[in-house]
Length: 562
Image 1 (tube, rainbow, N blue to C red):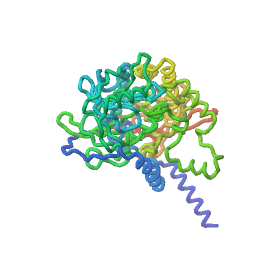
Image 2 (image 1 turned 180 degrees about the vertical axis):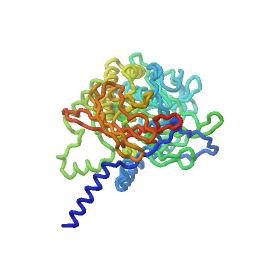
Image 3 (image 1 turned 90 degrees about the vertical axis):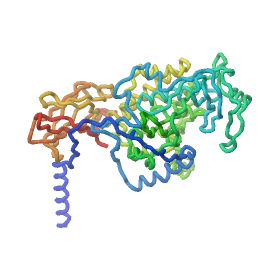
Image 4 (image 1 turned 60 degrees about the vertical axis):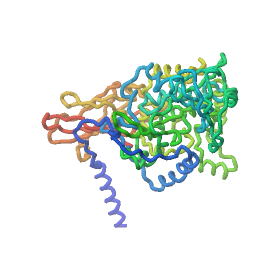
């Protein structure tokens, strides 16, 4: 009994000490913020290629079973992304280079998208051997090479609009994508090269004939004037090395220094994929290309294929289960089996099926792409992608920052580029806006949305943009900032509360203090929950370092809770 009392006292004392003294903080160096990863150094020898894109079943089993078991059993927990700078941003690299969320782009520039449109007539050089969409490899009148994709029967625009919109939004976000442009053509504007071939069952190469192309075209929807709508995707330049994986590194590429599962640009891509309901994210839809630029050779990393976006499953319309089920669902499958069918999976609810019927029937060019009922917490693609499974709240915040950077005007311009019927276009625009705002409320309110921190001239105030307030996901005076001033050892030296007064806020720093060479301003936000209850989110921390020569503090870092 005596030993138990001693233990209780000791634990209480330890807890009190932990409250009085926070763990030692990371100290940021007083140096310029790194905005480039410098991963374009010359690689003289061509890195080893791979064939991941040919192994979709193997990858699904690996990522859904083996990799997930390893991740869970290792109890690795939330760990910070490795491709971030001192301002908690992702520097420019061969993987990602920020565009719209750092410097808003004109709506017409986003609508143009990357790449060059195809020039008619087109010449078929090869059948499309990979993927489910109907299409061909073609060369246009300017001798440029493209992948030409067509819509599935009964759904004009289902694939072509998904590709058109998906490529533009991911490019404007900052990812490397080849681009996609609509091309409407008559049958006589699609010629067949006498040397054109296709692979039968991906094994036997055979000649591709005019009759076979005609038969393919008869099975796809046509425009009112008889033309066929297609989407032309420019061929990626360089020496293709196969796909990049979402875990590990390409060992033969010395510039590939960060494990892919630790890249925020890949982790947080989940937020964009969920926004557009892209089902087949993963290695099968990535490409690494060994390129030459300014006399240097290096690898550039691309995402491609957005034909499985919105309500499209590429060669048919998505079912109600598609955005809420992995291909491998051990727990749900066992639940259904052991309950003899009494357990209902989420998509089996009557409301889900009714919405699926309504959306498919009303908007055949879009399909099942829910707006108001979208819930990012329940969204699932086809497979568990290793980088996505390691996304932290801090990564998701960054992803939401990208998604919510797109304005209504920009989304209107992008949807207009997809050439949809008016009713379908209006719904797609509405759904993109609604889902964007759901993402904003979900992730920008979960962490103190501190951006662009700066000190006042006298150093007495730290001012910052509150992104949640600025983008309308919190009221102007809704947040209460819970502020702690910490010294360089992590000890709390002062605490106070302050109400927000708008999208730009300032909190006190205590002013210049040469005796404190380093301090951290930690802020959390108290917001109203869905039932009016008070909810306190994760913290953001602004790091200040004393610059002796100028006798003032300067902002040297910004970090957030994982």
